[in-house]
Amino acid sequence: MNLEHVSVEGQEAQISFLGIPPTQRSGVSPSWTSSESVLEESHERRVKQKIIDRAVQKIIDRGLCGAEPVKAYLAELYRRDCRPNTLRTHAATIISFLVYLKGRGPDRLEAINREDIGEFVEHEQDRGLKPNSISVRLRGVYSFLKFLVHRGALSADVLTRKLRIKLPQSLPRAIDPQAVRQMLTVIDHSRDRAILLVLLRTGMRIGELLDTRLSDVDLSEQKIEIMEARKTRVGRVVYLSEDACAALRQWLVHRSEKSAYLFHSLGRPRLSYESVRGRFERYLCRAGLAESGYSLHSLRHTFASELLNAGMRLECLQQLLGHSCIEMTRRYARLTDTTRRKEYFRAMAQIEKGGLDGHY
Image (cartoon, rainbow, N blue to C red; front, top):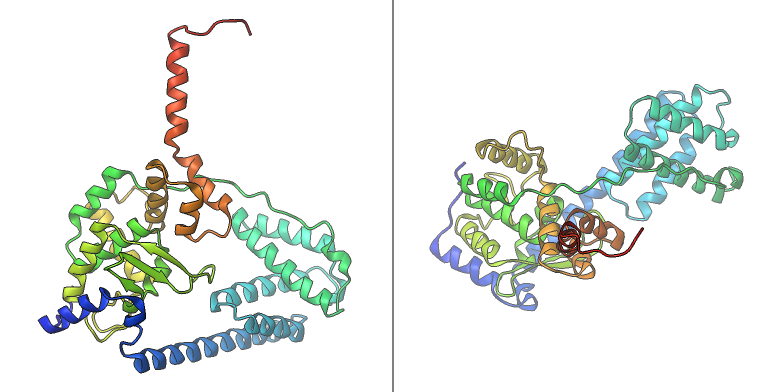
């Protein structure tokens, strides 16, 4: 893929722009950035409204009960500034629950009881949904029912002794160091190399990286400011290694000044997730790793695993990953803990030598 080239003056402007303090960087093209932000917010509001309207219309078209309270509930999520994907998930969950209720008998929300919830869970299990998906749906149902209880439309008894789905605690899948080296050798595009190295060295989620603007990057301080994480909506700062900074500088030579986003494609101001995933899978094939099962999120797992192996404390890693709970970060300690490994082999060496005394 050929990218639009900028002039030497444009290259120097971009690089120097990223090398000055954030307080000074904020003064670059403020009106343009502000107007774009307003347009994006307006577009997101319209998308949210369409999601609510379509959900309500779908309930009416299918002859389901609860169109009015569902609309009120989704409007409440809208006022709480939930993301469009959150609205979609809650709308789809509620509609699935209402469809199930319609086949059970009384077509009234006031008639819902604990048995209805339990049998809905069994119904979703019989459909073959995975435990994580069922757990998300169950939380969505309880959230909606709690809203109805607060409105006085449902007895609070339905919220007592809530059901819980036992979720599997699988280990995060990190990429083998040799596989990482194989991939880096086959990447021939400066933008793609920068994307892979930034994900690998910062632990950013792919959505966070695609939302990153040029003004969020400071190469002189070797950091990226994530103003608002897409998943948690909490901002944080991540840091750039030397090789990630070098890859970014190489990309800036080719990057177009027309986009406010750090990464863009030809003719588009920003990259899509599907585009990046497709490129990543193509490089896996080139490196002979097509059957490895690695995904873009594996880069984040690799980042966490390598820092733990290098001795970073869990509390520091938690902040870099943007985890709200340290238990999320602790999963990586189960995956790779050099201290535990060393202790095991030290003790086993003593056992194999017959160095233990006493009786069991």
